Length: 119
Image 1 (cartoon, rainbow, N blue to C red):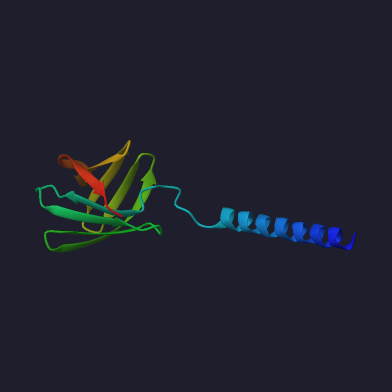
Image 2: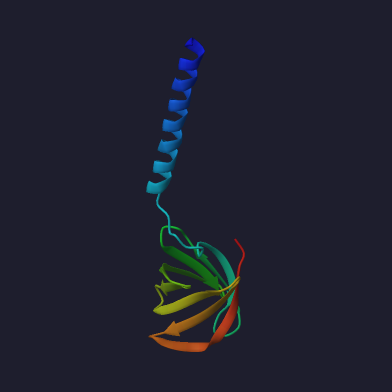
């Protein structure tokens, strides 16, 4: 009978620990998107460009020797990046592929180009 009581207490403690893990996981910050990561694409002149989206909403990038900084937000099937340069980049997911469009002053510049999520 004594072993049965120990087993019941152990089961109760294990259940409480699992519940605590689940509750902590529910409170953890999450972007809720699959956009966090690094992308390779090209800029509006066809030169290589890299974009990194962090889970805190910040963005960084590089193109043609220039470093870019900005912020991003999830807009459904797209991540919209607002750069400090007055440009906006939109990464759009379609199935398992991505495309990139660029906007200057609200006007689209160039055509949509492929983007590849590399990290």
